[in-house]
Length: 106
Image 1 (tube, rainbow, N blue to C red):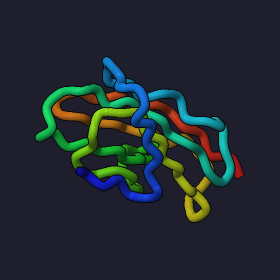
Image 2 (cartoon, rainbow, N blue to C red):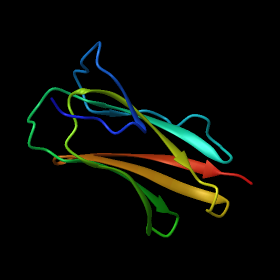
Image 3 (cartoon, one colour):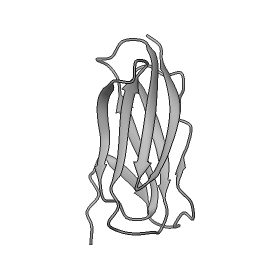
Image 4 (tube, rainbow, N blue to C red):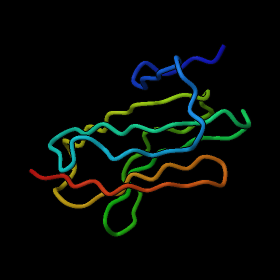
């Protein structure tokens, strides 16, 4: 049995069939937004990463970094210490990658 960190909510009732990064909600946001994504049932050796980048492409925070069971996940990004502006949530799983824009307004 794989343990899921308590800050990472997972819905194990239905298994997704595709790799999806949903639009963060709310967006624009202040000071927190929720990022949801689906990990399909594929190889268990793959690492999932969810990084937040600023408008210049610099990594500002890592929200997920590890092996995840297939499922739908929800991660809250608490951006209290960050400046207003455009950010990018980038989800990578194996060779696949998805990106969503996020706007922090203070």
